[in-house]
Image (cartoon, rainbow, N blue to C red; front, side, top):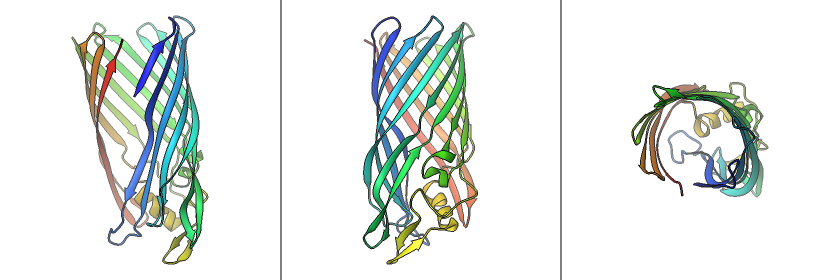
Length: 292
């Protein structure tokens, strides 16, 4: 949810609320499991500004204050805690006729979840979980077929290998995305495709962030690569690589636009240690844009 306000022909301010990240699993009661339970939800309040330096070049910056909820359980011995974090984003766009070149840098976002994993009868680990820094470049052209066809391509690099806690289970990831939009009167028809390699790390250590042990069966159990691999298979199994998206936009009124999309991440399977993993995802989105 966001709102923007132009202050002049060259300056625009904006603010909004968004979901920054979300991942979670619940295997309590599953046969043969340690009853793992985990969930990370991060919400962001964003404030930004854009400035047009020249007829061709625009720059922008956004500050995000994030609120995170987290519970991290190799077993069911966990609790939900919360805290705040801060990140920034810088971006620029350059127009060359009907083609626009763009890019952005987004800083890491670290949130510390205090007393979130139990490792003794009355002791708990504090664990910092960091959303990775990102670097992205893209281009778009809207001059094809009488300016009815828009084509766009993006490359996004996610630095999981240096992100706190995620670095223990993920490697860096590059995402390639292609999209097209065709305008027919008041309707815009859209299709997209993206590819991202599975980020699961192959060489593992004996810790997850600052957690190097858990409380299990009334005793403190040290983590080892096999247990960390089990966390990969049960709590961080985002292994799908290919996603397709269909969308439509409708300009209902001069100042009112409705957009909707349906996306599906194709099912992928992978063997993680002793665990066979299958994962896919489907989501539906609907948006309303009101200009006044």
